[in-house]
Length: 205
Image (cartoon, rainbow, N blue to C red; front, side, top):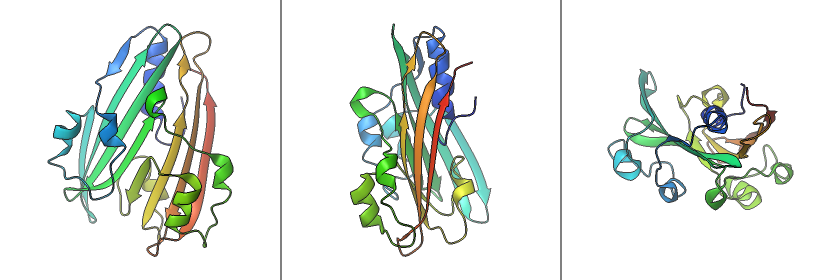
């Protein structure tokens, strides 16, 4: 399967659930995930806040020491499967990026592609984008090694914001999944330099 930005793990787990599993991963505190901001956490704090991650990858580069951890929880009932995923990146021990996705009704993340058209490259500021699209579900500071965002960290990009929507998966039929992602890049002055959108409907296999 080829899922849109940030949704590969969720897609895999939802299809597993639709195939008969009841749960994948461990529950974590989603309310804390929604209150994150860049620089708000250290690499010594995430286990106390969210527990042990599903994955923990460390790597070093000329830009510093990076650690990316991922939390994932998915649940299936008789009609559909839903999931939430949190990825955190720490650079030299400080939160450098986060990305949160959820298809659960109580904290479902959204991405409004119609409103996205009001974001103007070279004109819209962070304040403008926030007023247009609402609070992002993810933020990434450059440089980054976060898997889903490193290829968008082009020269001149200081920060990226992300909005993502991921539909639940029916436990019947073809287990199709729908995903929509919006990424807005900003220069060091906080002005939008690029607007990227991905929409995908993938059938489970």
